Image 1 (cartoon, one colour):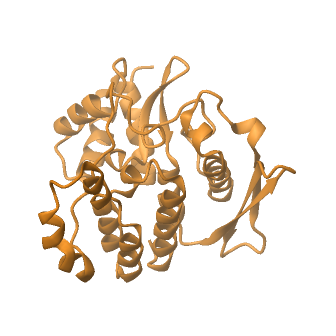
Image 2 (tube, rainbow, N blue to C red):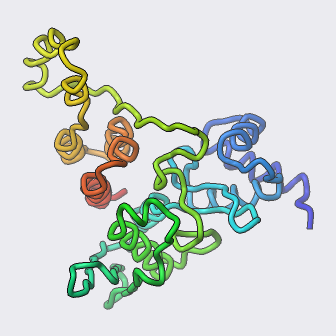
Length: 279
């Protein structure tokens, strides 16, 4: 069934207003930046319905329009589910536990998600052998983190009745998880965004500049991501807007792709402080 023009304009105009864009510019930008080449206007309308319903931002890598098994579908990332859950007034946190075999290999992850209006948590266990995608580099590199994402998403879906889109269990891995190399043949690791130095860094800056031409390895060392600086900055945040601005400015999701443990720390801290600030 073809979507009527009036329905097109309604959801496009509504979503465009939330992003402070003209509807024509919104459609052109989405079709150029996030939609598969063969996506139709009907595909885009379905995508916008879900993005608007849950107030998700495609440019913040919370929701995608992807090609999955020959069909164009809407996909909500783990970041999108985290945002949905943390905005729920009844959300009361979650716990993770892992089951391991005799060799220490993780075989299952359980997420217990709590609501303030329920006496018992929703408990979801996901098993590695049922979830792992053998062709996914992310699953090969960080199986524990990927299994945790799977358990969190399924617990969120059951706890808050979230539906209408593909999730972490679909046969697709978005750019945020696959190192962002979908459109670039030879991807390079992004350079962390510039941020104000700490007092200790400020004192060392003249000396560092003097040594800029010393050795390539030393220059690489200077560009290392300041995880503790990010954690301290988020700890000091006073509002959810300030928290998100800090996290986006550090660009942790891109800068920490090669260090999954540090990325876990950054994402967990963001979720914790988002809950603290009522986000």
